[in-house]
Length: 163
Image (cartoon, rainbow, N blue to C red; front, side, top):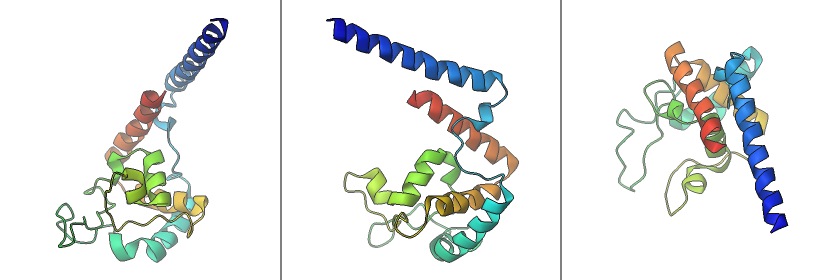
């Protein structure tokens, strides 16, 4: 019984600590930084990311981030969705940084699971984590300010909900 009480106390303290850190970050004006992992404001990362994107992503997602086909929400003859745009017209910015990184590393099928099929391979064996972050930084750097603000809020919310 004493062990359960100790574990419960540790859990309460841990949750309170995370909540306190989140509250401190928000009150300190850092709300938009909460959960942010993609260095889209780092000019060097963005420049590297532009090259990586051109070499590894543009063939499917388009040189101008426009996606594989205009109707990217309709499945092809094999039942697969085409590569979506990564500009503001797509849905990339609807996902928190952590999920975008995971999808890029492991591929959509591995992340979604349950038999979901996708042409999006994982790049963990092709790109380093820094290169993946740089490619995502380039993508995010192209979004309009209002989309970046929404995405930053999604990141902050993902930290709040996961804790």
